[in-house]
Length: 586
Image 1: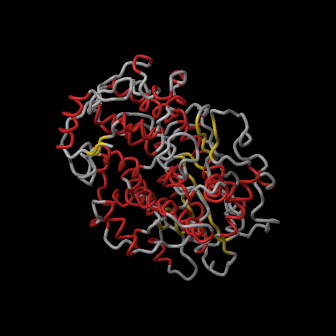
Image 2: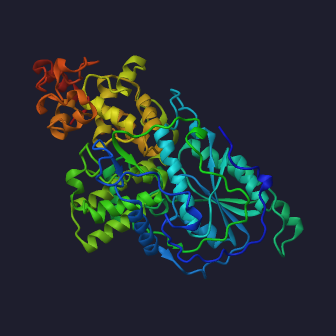
């Protein structure tokens, strides 16, 4: 991996002064004097023929996105600088919180210091291989999305008088060195919950303990040997704050509905942290480092030529919220459309930005409440929050169950025999199973880094129920591909789908014929991703018979004929046995 930035010895502090105030701290990206070479990624015109087969999310021109960001930042900003009474330098270690709006770590660092040093570490471990099966830990599409997130974060920080120091290497080596060089009293960061991230936190804390800061004014020199930079971790990844839960994480209910009803009745969601309009000055640094290219991450560029192309960064995230809620007014129908599979607007599509931390769940909550006040409240507006509570739940479960989330038997230590047949797995991975609904979803995942919630449940069920493949192979492939990968939601959902999750009632089988007839009745989705099916009559696209490749395995609940009907007798017998095992067919 290439190292772009200069050595730490080249860094120096000249003088801590506030930068001159720009004409408008919310300058549009295209005209900001510091950012002339850092515009948004190339974009096709909304609705243009860039092609009928691709769409950008959000589908807005750059100047409109700039206005949305300006207005949103103004709404959630504070000009009160009286709260800043700190001293010295504080470091902000950006991780999966690549945003300015509602970033408590950033605001605390500003309030406790005279100068803030924002840092992102390009950790080589993020571009290694997965734990069990050696798949790429970060695929090219998510890496490109991350690159765009970093470029946008750098823009937004510069618009507020800061910058983003980008360093290649391990945080436990970079952050103590920076703390020593700049005599930083605190490193602020958002708290994570899974073992790999927790291990990095532990190593960073240990590294900071090896740094001895000079005595502060009035401090005894005899005490200075115990004066070390501190690592202050802040909870900021969920809609409900962990400290506000009505139970400890060790007593977290194992049934989602119980959790949801409890937090809804007993908890209040905190409002977004208001961000100062000016966050500078930063320390004076010669080389802030460059946003890496895809090649410098050891990957090859993959262009999205079909389906949805998500734009990375906080500006795109805020623009998508505005587009979905306000411009297209789709929030009011979310519950009715959320199980779609084709196109950008059947659901919010917020998840990639939530996973990178470019979008705060509390911001979404406040925008939903604003929509309910200004337009209407209904089941759909509530259901967006319902899904965010699911996301919270998986995050809190990862605290309760720790590494068992990644173990074969899951949180309940279920004993079962799984296959790791490579040929079978590759047929699933490559979308060559002979079942159009499975194959179309897997091709979408590979081509775009995204798959609908409905699609994820269907392909998971097929892999573990019909093929009998080790669920961890599916989970790790999703880890490679998904733009919205986060370990809590990904492995939480896979343990549920595999029947090894914390809730013993969650043991569901998704019937492909039923799912196809319900959610793709005209075969539009499968025909989009499998063009060879387009010539078939609509009702044959999901059930093409010999017009498509051979089916790699029979279905657990009976095979399907070209009309989508099950082989009657054996299907009924198999279905009955499945229900005896407490499976739920959908």
